[in-house]
Image (cartoon, rainbow, N blue to C red):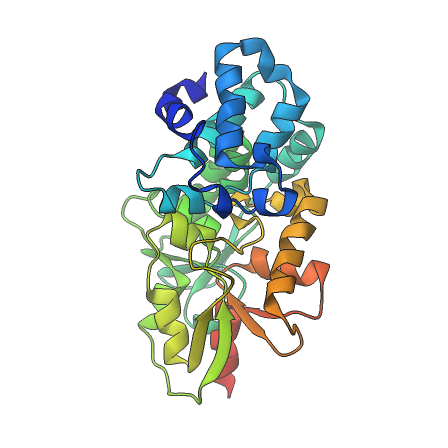
Length: 324
């Protein structure tokens, strides 16, 4: 089983309470099973008794994880609890036990195809081509990250192969990626093509000083907890006049409403709404507070459950100041 490769995580996490306050799902369900310790205990049971893999409650718990990475990032020993959950999902899929909603979503994601339009040696993967004059654009859906997160490694590879073929055929030398989940997935997958996050590219461009504007910054699970917390997104927003305030009760917790699980809202809408409501409650006055997030998933999800919230993606925040 894939989870056997993470026995050190199971042994360490199953009796540890130190990071339970950082699990987004545990903070809204108040269930011990929705913490790293609870999941490790469940997977320890499965590891010792293979028949337990068929327990539907166990499987549902594994697919309820938001995979924020905050627990791993702030663990003093950095035990890879995210890797353990992803391994368990692979085991569930390979045993033919994936939940029906997961299988249905997988069928949709597996149909992704990709096209390239435009001219130039730089290729952009995102929604705001106007910020990148002279760039081509590649479009067509998720490049395989969501399928990988769901535990469908073979399907993920097939979709990525189609994405890679489109990118290579474009003859680009640089691929600019906007969505943090896609950036995390693609950053090390190409030889001879530099993959950069959009904030890195935009930071190197021309800009003009703007009057100060206050905003709450919602850290990306992927950029912060998976990819070393790069300074480029915050530096870019500062150059465009945004005075950023970290959101919430502390600087360790994730408020990205399931971004780490990529398709969390599609699988767990009721639970995702609870994650969003926690953000609304901590925000105070939604009509006056301004939020900026690097992730279009975070923006779409937060506005879905309360359209009053004022939230922009990082690219939208830059575009708005460029136009002023």
